[in-house]
Length: 256
Length: 353
Ligand SMILES: Nc1ncnc2c1ncn2[C@@H]1O[C@H](COP(=O)(O)OP(=O)(O)O)[C@@H](O)[C@H]1O
Ligand SMILES: [Mg+2]
Image 1 (cartoon, each protein chain N blue to C red):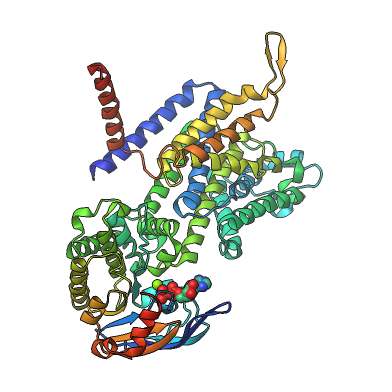
Image 2: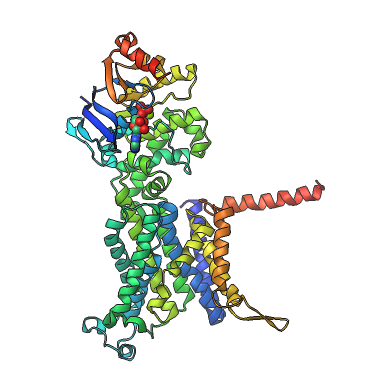
């Protein structure tokens, strides 16, 4: 199993944002986490990535316990993520946004980076490798023509894609996507579905996806976990979830 | 060698040559002001590394400078002249006979300042924003107070006189260029990108695998190291080092410089260092009594200069938040662009539009 979340609970003061949620992401699969706004989905991501320390429960990644570890450590183990509200490095270019996410695997130390004399320091080779890999990644994701643009000057859809590129630059094994289709029209959403499947295959990823666009979710997920008020109210394949009464009620009840 | 590197080397050569020439033709006052510009640039660059490039808010520069200045003062005063200054209490025997060359003392000061930053970094760098600013400010005052009370080492409030005074422009500009180049190499490396990522968004930087604490402390220690070197040069330039030179108001000058030059711009910092340092000298008349048409203008008195500078800082913060350069660097292309824009303006006017 790539990822196992075991009865994760997160309380903020009196509010239980996530209530003993368990889920599993098998190797190479796309798994979806859905539910009305405020259900606790993003909080689950924050617990998996170490941004929040769960009140109780465990996060197991590739067999080892990573609960409440430092987020940078977790990223190094191979969990990459995007954010619900796009969070690019605003002042930096498209290229810089991506290459920055390659820093975590740098082996040279600070002195080797400053005194980077070819032959004496390992840094020049590493820098060249990072540059090549970044160009390669931008090429694959169709962002290469925009590489020198300021990241926030990109159109919305490209910004979303850049966030994915940046997450991929960390060489993740598991990719967490928080509402990647937000703000997209049906056509773009279909394209995104193909895109997610493509990167899953190309980068040998497992994917955990939070999404509101049901077409997208039904289209690409192997298993769907449904949350409402912090609770996991249903789990199943897309066809099982489609007819599930509780799920329909949760969505209708929330006015969505 | 790339064109850019060749250009940089030529520029460095030209500056050093100029420093060499000016060193022999200028009067001692002008030399002193220009030397102060270079020293201020070193310290302002060090502050910008933390505040402008790493996005932290530190106000500890005066303290790190004091460490560097005292390292130079303690170890470069000729042994035979020490007893003269240390008359309240003789210099501690462990150090009384150690005399070091200036360069060694400067590096020692840098290393000690960096070591001190490393030690206080553990508690302090867990704080954010204003809290970090207050804590660093506090530590900088603590250093000053310690130095005021370690009579047998620093000569306390009496200070250390007879520091072999440094006025060689070539030496000081060489030091400033070395600091600039090292900082440039650091900031253009993967570590520099990591610092900027932290500045832009800590949460995201962390999610991309950048260890916040490690990088913040690296930035903070390197900053202190350079501030220590700058402080050492400052002490040598003054020729006298005493605790009152390192009040927290000293740090204020560097805050002003980096805000004016642009938080996150090295070339902006250098330009602003010259503007502010020369401006400070030029504005000295504000501090003198001014008599106009036979009456004394009452607001012209010591301290007015600082008022003028505070107003300047407020104006920048309110209206020109990005400073002169924002986060950009001065480059050949930028100068070309500026020239063509000015030409363009001229043309439009010429067309009568
Ligand atoms: N840092 C926090 N502090 C307090 N409450 C929070 C915090 N993060 C999330 N919450 C609360 O947890 C609940 C779930 O939020 P979230 O996980 O963002 O939901 P979703 O992503 O499903 O829309 C909300 O009620 C939200 O207000
Ligand atoms: Mg959310």
